[in-house]
Amino acid sequence: MDRPSESAPLLIACALGIERLALRRGERGAGTVTVLRTGMGPVAAEAAVTRALADPALRDAAVLATGFCAGLAPGMHPGDLVVAEETRDPRGTTRCVGTERLVEELVRAVPGRTVHTGPLTGSDHVVRGHERSDLLATGAIAVDMESAATLHSAGRTGVRPVAAVRVVVDAPEHELVRIGTLRGGISAFRVLRSVLPAFVEWHRSLLLPRR
Image 1 (tube, rainbow, N blue to C red):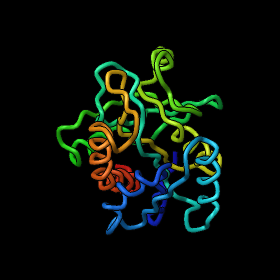
Image 2: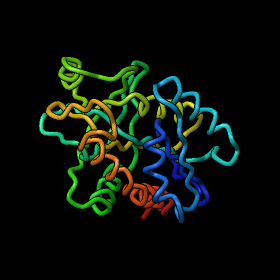
Image 3: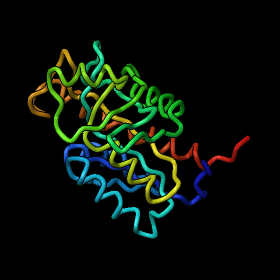
Image 4: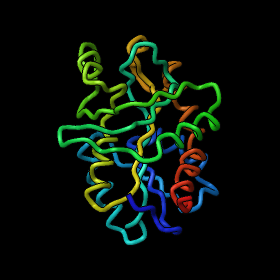
C-alpha cells in the first residue's frame, strides 16, 4: 500500500456521543485530525464515513475506527484495548495497517492496560450470551457494530491506510448493562479518553519515508 502524502489527514470514526466526548480531550493540538461521530450500527457508519470521505479535504485521509467493543475471549476485562489485525463482516475482510506501531503507542499512552491483537468482527446488534462463544470460535477476539463497516467504506472510496482500535467495555465475565453506570463503563471511558495521542503517532509513522 502506498503511503499517504505528507499533508494527508487522519479521520477517526466513532459511533456514540460518549465516545466522541472521550476523544475530544486529546483533539486539541492533534493537527490534521477529524473526529467523526457516525451514529450507531453498520448502516449509519457506512453512510457517515462515505459522506465524510467525499469531502475533498478528506479524500486522502487515513481512517481509524474506534470506540467501545465487547470482548469475546475469556480473561478480558473492561478497559482492555483491542488492536484489530483485520476487521470482518459478511462482505469480507479488511486488513489493518501498522498494528505493531499502534500497540507500541497505546502501551505508552495507557501504561498498565492490556492490549490484545487479533480479528475484530462486526455485528448489526448487541452480542449477548451464546453468541459470544459462537463468534470466538471463528477466531475473532472482539465484536462491535461499526468498525468493519467503517473500514470497508474507507477502502471502497480509495486506497488508504486503515486501522481499528477498540476499548473493551463488556466481556464474558463482565457483562455491562448500561455504559457509564457501572464500573466497567467508567473504566473504558477513561481509557478511551487517553488514546488519541497514540492514534496521532500511528498516523505520523505512516508519513515517514521508508528506510
